[in-house]
Length: 479
Image (cartoon, rainbow, N blue to C red; front, side, top):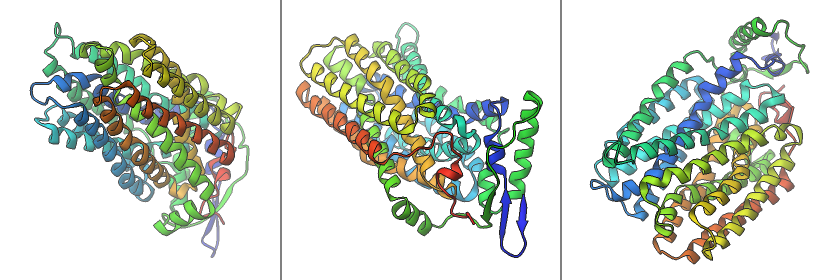
C-alpha cells in the first residue's frame, strides 16, 4: 500500500493479489464455511415442502393448504426483512460480524419451529428463520465474491448457490425417515426434523471462526493496512501449498479514504448511473423467485392432491427433483466463465420458461404420471437452477463494492417480495380449488416471466467473466 500525502488517497494492490491466487485450502474453507448457507436454506425449504402433508394431517397443527402456502410466504417475507436489515449492516460493520449473527438467528428460530403449538407461532418461527437466511444471502454472497479469484468467480458462485439443492436432497432423504411410522411417530418426526436441522448450525459456527474479514471491504472502508495484513496471511498459506505465487495480472488501484456509502449514494448509483443494471437485476431476481417458489413450496401438495401420493412418500419424489437442481450449476457453472455471462444466462432462463409452459399444459391435460411429472420438473430445474444462481451473481457484480451487500439484499428482497411471497400463496389457493386448469394459469405465468427475464438479459446483460470486481463496477471511492 502507498499513501498519497495530503490528499486522503492511497494506492493498494489488494484486489490484484487476491485475483492472482491459485485455488487452495483457503478457498475451500471459504466455500465450505460460507456456502453452507445455501445447504441450510435448501434443507429448510425442502423440509417444509416434504413435510407439508404431515403438517396438514398433524393432530396438533392440522394446517390447511392455504395456511401451508401462507407459512411459506411468511418464511420468504422474513427473508426479505432479514436481507434488508442485515445487508445494510454488512456494508457498515463488515461481512464477518454479520454472518455470525445471521446464523445464530437461523439456528434459534429453526429449533423453535419444532415446538410450535399453533399456526401463528409456526408462521412466526418460519418468518424468523427466513430472516436469518435472508441476512446470510447478503453478507455471505458479498464475502464469497470478494475472496474468490476473478477467473473462477462465476463458476464458484453458481456452484455455491447451487448447493441449496444439496440441502434439498438431504431434506428429502430426512423426510423419508421422519415420516416413516415404522421408525418414528410422524407427529414427532416432523418436529424433530426442524430441531435437528437448526442444531447442525453449531458445526458451521465453528468453521466460520477461522475466516477473516473481507480485505476488499477493509480496503474500501478506510482500513487498507488491516486488509494488507489479511492478504499477506492468505498468501503465506497459499504459498505453503503451491510454492511461488504468480504475478498479478493487473496493477494497483488508487482510492480515497472514506467510510461506508450513504443511502443517498446507494440510491443514486442504483437508479442513476447504474439504472440498466438495476432493471436487469430486479427482473432476473423477481422472475426466478416466482418461478421457483411457486412450484417448489407447493409441489408436495400437488403430489398428494392430484396423484394421491401418501405424505410419507413425498421424499422419494423430491429427491430426484433436488438432485437435478444441484447438477445444473455444478455442470453448467464453468460455462458462465468461458462462454460468458450474457449468452448463458439468456439461454438458461429461456429454456426454463419454454419447458415450463410445455409441462404445465401436459399436467393440465392429465398426460403425466407422478414420476413423469417429477422427471419433467427435474429437467426444467436443471436449467432453472443455473439461471437462478446466475441472478445472484449478476446482482453482486453489478454495483460498486461499497454497496455490494446492500445491493444484493435490496434486489433479493424486492425480487422475493414480488415473485416469492406472492407465488406460494397464489399456488396454494389454486391447488385448493382442485382444478388442474386453474393451476395451469400459474404455470404459464411463471413460464412467461422466465422468458421476459431472458429477453432482458440479452438486452441489458454485460460481460463480467474473468474481470476484477473493481473493473466491472468502479468503486465509489475510486480516485
